Length: 260
Image (cartoon, rainbow, N blue to C red):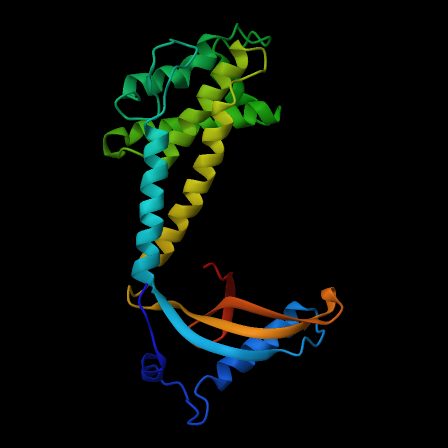
């Protein structure tokens, strides 16, 4: 973040009052305080108002990218084993997930199933795809196999840390463990699933921010010290300090607690 001042704000075309350049912003904070109190009049009184920081797209993008890389590397660095071969390794890395290993996992269900009750099908996967809508489980199995086949078709171009590959392999790991543990799989798979979901959300933010002008302002940040009569304290006067975030049109878009 960078420090900003009223001159900097003036550059973006804001109308500044000669008597009190912060009057417009203080008025918006007063209204926000009232709205936060469900319309109850808090007798807001400004004590001091000071612009403190501004956040640009390039800075927020850097924060997301750093967080993403750190968390992804944690997943890629996870050393464990899968109960089909018990070979310990970094099970989400491409070094472990060779094309042959991916094919092994793809075919595990078929190789560990007996002949389907319908003798027309000698291969469980043929049975599954022919009866795809028979149950949610069979439908899910077919979806995962199709996804694996798609990944295998472009395996050489898949980069380390591909979230689709990680998610697809995670499904097989959990399934194999679930089968071998009588429906009591290790909690590690659920933890990785949660982390993967959050990584996908961060990746969406990164992709969205990457489309924007890196010098675009995300928010301006101002520190406001003010007094209110707090109805929760029988109307006692209370002095507060809070950061208010304004967008590039100087509308309030958020708040942050002040910390010394």
